[in-house]
Image (cartoon, rainbow, N blue to C red; front, top):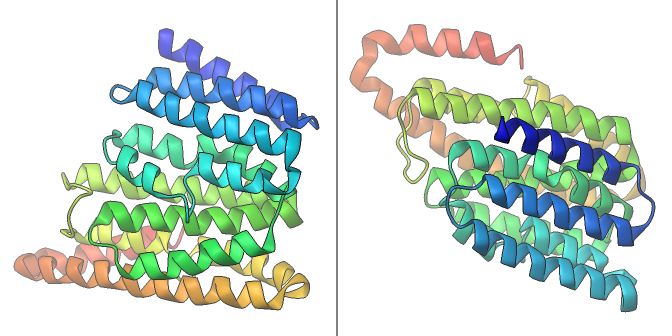
Length: 280
């Protein structure tokens, strides 16, 4: 009952935030949402709340004196590069359920506000860093985090150009992330390693936005709109997506290597996984 009440309060307050035009009210609502989310955390709840409060203060200072830097404070709150260190250090202690919530529901309002304060320079800087960080990912958790940041920029751009596309992308990405984390749990695997089963490997490939899966068409829709506004940024996003695919395929190859030990089960599992994936 307690968790249901918290969930209702969170959704109600977030709905209020989606309909606000005043950044001061958005600041207050972001604080309330951070507090509610911190209450649900089993570990490091106070540390998370303190970090979010500090970044909210940066948001307020930017709002009152340097409006052009509002996007910086929002990137801080979401943990996007180049301000990703706190998120990596803290999120690794989250449960899979809390991690899913932090990567989806908890980013809705900051993402929409970021779309209204869009900065070409910060987007290029963050995406360039993501290209470098992706290639250095040493375990599934880091790949998942950097993937979330990259998808976050696609969602921000979708919000900037077309609200309906933002919601479509968010629903698809959230569903696929849930599918992947469920496959990890089902396979009894840990995020802090490179071990994979066929099921989790295929679900990870679907999450990458590889054609012809649904997330690819979401990216294509954003790209077609973006290329008319900023061809250079569109090319950077495509380049970063190609790099991310290299990492995703590395994970999938490790999945196939592990599956060779159970070669009798490999082909049926791969076929079923691919058929299921085409519907997402």
